[in-house]
Amino acid sequence: MSTAAHLLADTPAQLLPARELMAFTLASHITLVPLGVALPLITLLMHYRGLRRADPVALLLARRWSAVMAVQFAVGIVTGTVLSFEFGLLWPGLMGRWGDVFGLGFGVEAWAFFLEAILIAIYLYGWRRLKPWTHFWLGVPLPLAALMGAFGIIAANSWMNTPQGFTLDANGRPVDVGVQQAIFTPMFGPQYWHFAVAMFLTAGYVVAGVYAVGWLRGRRDRYHRLGFTVPFTVAAVLTPVQFVLGDNIARQVFQKQPVKFAATELVWNTGTRVPEYLFGRLQEDGTVKGGLKIPQLDSVLAGFSPDTQVTGLSSVPADSRPTALQATIAHWAFDIMATVGSVLILLALWYAWCWWRRRDLPRSRWFFRSAALAGVASVVTVECGWITTEVGRQPWIVYGNMRVSEAVTPTGAASLWTMFGIVVTVYVLVFGAFLTVVLKMRTRWRLADSGSGAAAADPEADTPYGPRPEQPAGAPGPRSAPGGDR
Image (tube, rainbow, N blue to C red):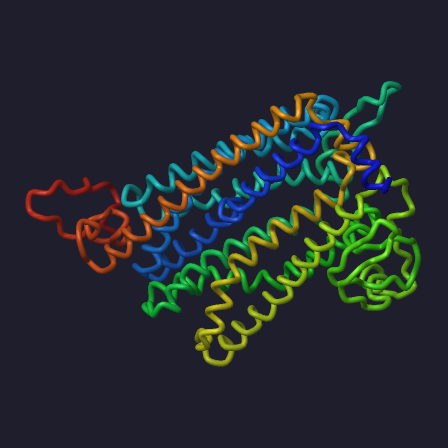
């Protein structure tokens, strides 16, 4: 019997459906997180530009983005709430034993969530009802609340990767909890900044990609130009920063989670002058099949010298390391993330070169095709980042202290598979509703911009703080409010 088959035989039957359910809900939720964390800042940048330069197009974009932000937040409530319940329902062993140690992170995230909901409501209400600059400054705390939510989640996850801030009693239960140590773990800083910058970068490319598609379809007006330029500039500036942060976090993993590093790099035997494999598949006997082998590069990347010693997977027992399949999954996720990041740097340099030379956007359609794909590619890298983090940590749910199999619920596998089917159905409906609402908003705005139909009188279609469009005779128009026509 192979090592993988032996380990699989020793795991409870409910482990697989519990893992699949958690993976599906997390992968679904994280597609919304970049917009949830970063769209408020991008919207406020456009809002500031509109007020500073008295630019009605920028104000119109900011108002419309705020509407998308609210819809996205509503969907995020559903997917985030499901995840919160799953921690307790699927992994009672984790929460029961360790909740007192790292649970504060979830508490911070919950408070940030409620604060963000209130701030979004105030920001949406403020259009036309508040003085322009008062309205803007009331929106400024929004990105801070979003970052505080990310702080809580990353604090919890980084603790799971490098647990500290406790001692174990005679029964193996954590006591003498140090809250500060439990939050600010060795991996917290690298993980938090890498995650935060990834959210802003991804949101910038996603939003810009929408207007890149419009540009390719012949919509070359200032509305599409500005809608592309502001978020793409944010993303382009942050792309090389993210590459440096990514390199730093990989080196931190090498130092603090050497077995995870070995999994992501397919290193089997401990040694120096370790080669780097681009893609490839780890076999049960420790060999690597396929991929591109670059001699000594892994040691150089890990410690800036070919003589750097890299810990191999075989240095720990089979039940304390990822399986060959799990290592391959983590390795591919990491390589895809690094490859996409490198391509995005080239795209950012292309944009910077044209702007530096002509103070204008690139004229090539290939640039805008690439920009349209950059948003999707960025979301893929976010997914790959979490896959690397979670799969590379296997079999530990708390690194070095609790295995995933020890934390899983005793609920039967059949019940969990049924729950999985229900969650998939609900998520398909929720995301379908989200896309339907966004597409209807886009259609309504497009009709409003062309001045046709009832959409022309839509309160979201005209310039915020500007004169309202003429209403048909006898039609009840929106009520004026303080600061409305300024």
